[in-house]
Image 1 (cartoon, rainbow, N blue to C red):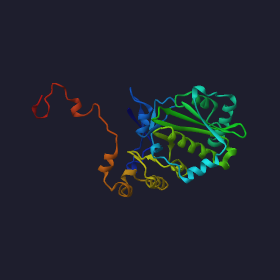
Image 2 (spheres, rainbow, N blue to C red; image 1 turned 45 degrees about the vertical axis):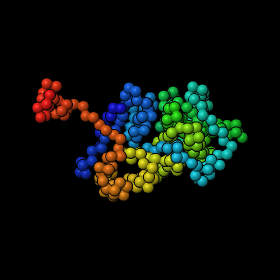
Image 3 (tube, helix red, strand yellow; image 1 turned 30 degrees about the horizontal axis):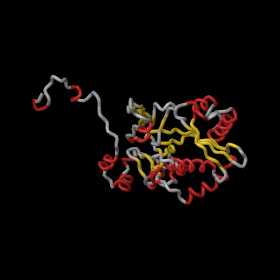
Image 4 (cartoon, rainbow, N blue to C red; image 1 turned 135 degrees about the vertical axis):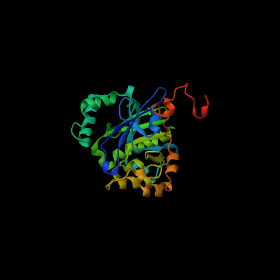
Amino acid sequence: MKLLFSEQKSDYAHYQFPYSVWALREAGERPSDIFNAGFLPSSRNLDRFYLCRQTRVNLAKFKPSSENRRILRKGAGLEVKLVPRGQFDFTAERRAFYKTYADIKFGKDVMTFERLDALFAAPVTSHLLLFTDRERGAEVGASILYLEGTELAYYYYAFYDLNYYARNLGMFMMTSAVALFAGTGFKRLYLGTCYSVNALYKTQFAGAEFFNGFRWSGDMKELKFIIQRDQGRLDQHLLESAEFRDEFYGGDLNKIAETSEFRVNIKGGGAAARRDKTDPAPGGAR
């Protein structure tokens, strides 16, 4: 993959010069390769990705907890069906239902009809997970998914009937997805970002992991430390924090670097790169 570093607002007083890290796929690379490196799509066409503190479930380690089972019981009577996008009828009724949900949850017209239509037509939507109340015969929720073989499932957007709040429908939908893909041999289910205490619900599954900037970590104490740290005034990058390094990585920055799979080959600019083939190499060798 190709990496681009897009500069953000700097804090010169504390020598903080932030960059957003973007990834672009190269020939032969699959979206799953980019997901696994810690990136999520920033384009519906899966041609641009951004590095972030995202979460996933290692499904080989998933076993439903008592809390997971409680949530699933609250959804008793709800039918779950996985549908390829090509077999999904994006009716006017469904379109209006999803738009109403988006207006309530995200704000009026944050997701316009045009954006909604583009989302359902884009490569990032390969499947839908549909939820139907059998007793009423009514569809009460839908989750947009990107599936790649059994390598990954990406739980993207969810739309549901907010009248089912008391039955924890939103959490039931996510928990159902985890159980479904764990039971059908998928390796990983990606659940989006986690930058606040309110987003920690995405980690309530055995096998939960988060990307911390240099590796995937299954230590939820580490994640909570970082989130709590975010609440204060920050005048250091995370890896400059001796408290973080000492608490979770024994204080050794070289050991932290060893856990990272990122390797960069610099092209051009260096003395070795500029040296002409006819120039003698160091020591006089040719």
